[in-house]
Length: 387
Image 1 (spheres, rainbow, N blue to C red):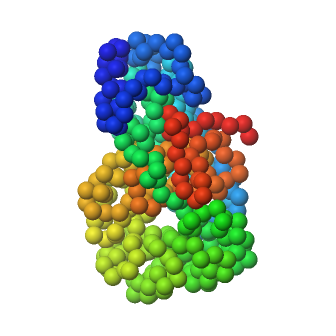
Image 2 (cartoon, helix red, strand yellow):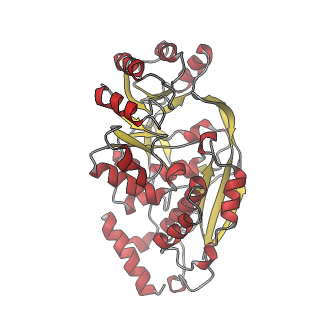
Image 3 (tube, rainbow, N blue to C red):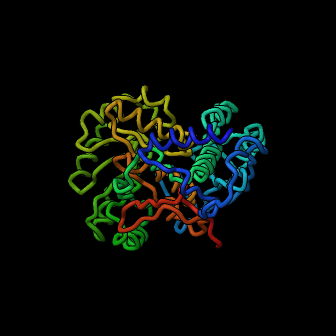
């Protein structure tokens, strides 16, 4: 890319974001000004360099939902290097995604980014990555996140600004309480009740009401609930939703199995609370098929292949009059901070995955007084920390 073409690209991004002077604060991989960086060399040197390594996430507590329990989450950390800049990305693979460290590393091993000498060709790069297989969403998301981080650093701006968003509009994030014994539920609730403004409760078994009553012994904070497809009878589910509303619940995720579209639509039509699709929505192409069956969608980078597609999903859902939520898996601050770049554009956020682990590799988006707080740091707004 010639210097004048780079300037055109940066100016176009700045115009879209409603900002100017994007080159003045161009930052390197450590967030420091890139003194003497030669923009004339963009696209003239070596191609993008991809590297990766497995990294298992250690959970603070055993995490239980309606279908399984776990104490760890397998993951893969990646980086893309270019002209002295580094973009970081991450794949996280909870059981229900059907992906493994082996499948992710296999996908990454056959991904040739060295053929691309211009990181600003994001559409071409990510279209190539997406074409390599019909699945592998988490592996694709890792590359997408790292590329967004890299390009944001080259421009010197965070993605919330490039998308033209107002960081003050980022919502509170929920903090998740998994299914457990009453004593453990009380303990988990006490640990977080004074740090958050809304909690999320996993339900979907035969002890849902006991879970809610136990939490209500500790706090009267608003609650979101996630049934994780656990409810089996639509009339019983609707009765429970009415009971939940009376007990301070404000929204419900994925009440019944994703295959039972008519039953979920029946519940949505009658529900006093907004109903969000989670397992029923993976990517952009899924939205038309679930329209009318849910009030809104929960977008997760590991499902939808990353920030590029997530941003398209936000805008498509809004055009269809649907509500939007951004969520996460168990992740480090790398992937959570990437998802947080979208947060000023959504109604609900569940970005607590980094808070559930003990071995976070990054510092990035913070939760201050329960609210998602974004910074001016370029890219996805993270830096590596020493454990």
